[in-house]
Amino acid sequence: MAKTHLKMTVNGQAVETLAEPRELLIHVLREKLGIKGPHIGCETSHCGACTVDMDGKSVKACTVFAAQADGADVTTIEGLGGPDNLHVLQEMFREHHGLQCGYCTPGMITRAHRLLQENPNPSEEEVRFGMAGNLCRCTGYQNIVKAILAAAAEMAAAKEAAQ
Amino acid sequence: MIPGAFEYHRPESVGAAVKLLAELGEESRVIAGGHSLIPMMKLRMADLSHLIDLQKIDDLKGIRIEGGRITIGAMTTQHELITNAALQDAAPILREAALQIADPQVRYVGTLGGNVANGDPGNDMPGLMQCLDASFTLVGPDGERQVAARDFYEAAYFTARADEEILTAVSFDAPQGGYAYEKQKRKIGDYATAAAAVLIARDGDRCTAASIAMTNLADTPTYSAEAGAALVGSGLDDEAVKAAVTAALSAIEPAEDNRGPVEFKMHVAGVILRRAIDRAWSRA
Ligand SMILES: Cc1cc2nc3c(=O)[nH]c(=O)nc-3n(C[C@H](O)[C@H](O)[C@H](O)COP(=O)(O)OP(=O)(O)OC[C@H]3O[C@@H](n4cnc5c(N)ncnc54)[C@H](O)[C@@H]3O)c2cc1C
Ligand code: FES
Ligand code: FES
Image (cartoon, rainbow over all chains, first blue to last red; front, side, top):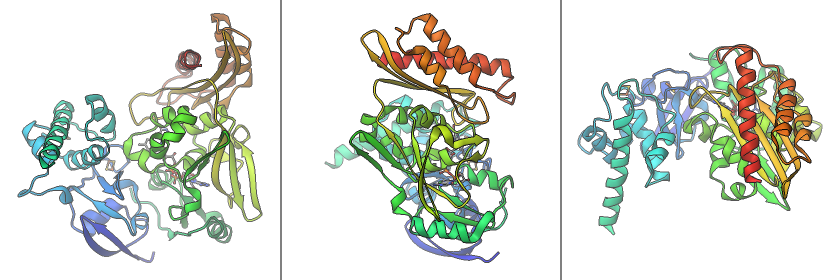
């Protein structure tokens, strides 16, 4: 099947690549673009390890065809922060032991980022409901929720300080 | 988990999409949010040579409320149903049901049109649309027609929509009175073991109108006129509620699967329906 020319913005950079329409966005990101933050957990739309931000929505990149993403603006964990400039969420996951093996973490943080954009001051229940599309086999979720609530508080404090 | 190869199309109008469907024939299908279709294609339960993506068709988007009539474009996402303030005012049952579908990621992309057109008995919106007595707008090569949600579902994955038709919108009168969408599921992100949509209007202590439909308890969503009628005129005393539940349970035909045996599903259906009736009545 003929490959098509895909154009996307990924983490602020314009990228172009060739892909078959049926290829999944997660494979294009990881294998064609070398962006390996988003993981493949289940590949069946259930675990959320592959979560990326696409046009301002949290989506499971294993359930998006490459062709559907043509023209999209995609942000992955790499676009949020790196080793030298951790995002507040990354800091708080470290601080509050929001990860153990870390496999679910890029999806968790990318999803939590969008959740806090939409609801900067969530209750614990809202965090749990808003994170329900992301599974973790290690932590029991308690510290993930703590880390997200702490990040929300940090972000609010930083915003206040800036005013 | 990679589906078979297909050619991809992204038309920008309903007319262009219908034309593609008609020209490309049986091996072509539209894709909306893809969150039912892509999993099926990965399992190779659907094998298609052409996918026609509806994402660029602006006419299929948006929620309009005019003179008590609500019209929702097929490409409106479940997330939009949850966050639209005017819809929350006019028909809060949509938000209540949409919040119980899947998980946040799925709701950002899953559409109302895809949910009702799919024909999977597990989908939550079809039962709700039957409860609301909604009408589906279908556009095909010969023009536009309306089909009532209560006449749309024929069997699992078989609907009144012809292959070359696109479902463009869903419309219904803003419901009056109390409402509830109650769903039992094994975990967040699961389809219903049993779910019930209930609308009840009330004048003083008397029920003046009631509509009841159930989800995932038969090959199709199950609207039961008898169940609603059993409540009308009553004060929702135990006897009337029992009669309504009995009527609804006689209309369903659950099948044994990994959500449990038939007896269990009948039991859960009864419990869920009773809860939905209580909640709708308390809000009426
Ligand atoms: C993990 C997971 C959990 C889920 N849980 C639930 C749940 O609890 N309840 C629930 O209701 N759903 C659930 N879903 C399904 C989800 O809501 C789907 O998004 C929805 O069923 C289909 O909408 P879509 O826009 O993704 O449609 P698609 O997958 O794109 O399409 C589905 C079918 O409908 C057809 N179609 C789509 N739009 C149109 C149109 N406008 N005109 C004609 N035909 C059309 C397509 O050709 C296809 O055959 C779940 C999905 C996942 C992945
Ligand atoms: S890998 Fe996409 S949801 Fe699990
Ligand atoms: S930290 Fe191991 S899966 Fe979440």
